[in-house]
Image 1 (cartoon, protein in one colour):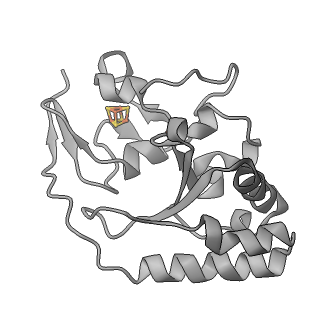
Image 2 (cartoon, rainbow, N blue to C red):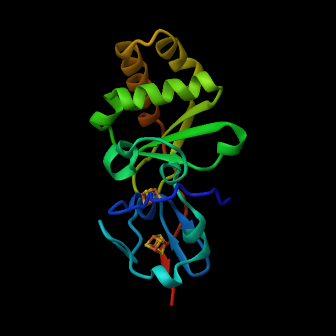
Length: 181
Ligand code: SF4
Ligand code: SF4
């Protein structure tokens, strides 16, 4: 999938996808949650000119949709996953619990998506080398967003994240292999 990118919006020092997204390619495989060996933390890809096609075409939705700069994943702790967008699914991959999750920018944006009819998924990572888990929380969050109630929203969000964190995380089965040359 390749969605049109917002002009002028760059990854900057964010390298979250090079850490959290697993790759299983002939030339590069790396487990979920392990920073790619070709990535310089805070700077980016050291093999940018010859990086795999998957790395050229995968972008989080912060690069695609009109959300505020606060949503940049290394600042917000949230990756907006691109898969499912065209089918009306918005997955918030919560890497860390940050103050951003308690901000009006986060709450009002999620409320807007719910009002627009998007399915809202919450996802959390497990330990390195395990698959993330995901749950649909649209109807769970809706009473709080309909009532424009920040306390109820935060309480429901925290409860959903706590439940996801308590899941058993399955191994991703990926063995690291680096041969981009
Ligand atoms: S997570 Fe998004 S902003 Fe961060 S490096 Fe990847 S594509 Fe860029
Ligand atoms: S090859 Fe480059 S772009 Fe691809 S995961 Fe590694 S550091 Fe990121």
